[in-house]
Length: 119
Image (tube, rainbow, N blue to C red; front, top):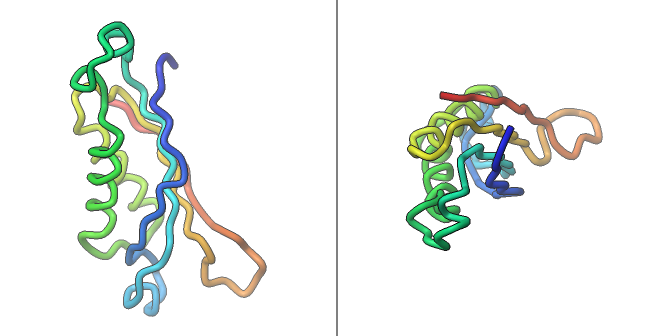
């Protein structure tokens, strides 16, 4: 693994879940991204066009998660990975998505999945 863009705790309200009530009310999620990309050109040039714009990535991720209803966290993570890998500089991404306050009868702060995808 080489250079990384690290984005942490992006909070999104989305319809993700297998239970009927999870498909009718938005719930809070956190998304962490480790985006693998060659950052040497941007490091030398100090030019935003030579790197991955964090604002654009977070907007795209939020759009991907909120445009429909998803059942599994595994699918949500894959949707995010696909979205990030659309950027030509992204060679791989690790996505962690956590459902905050999952609807289980136990004291569980979050549930989640982590995947890594590459081109």
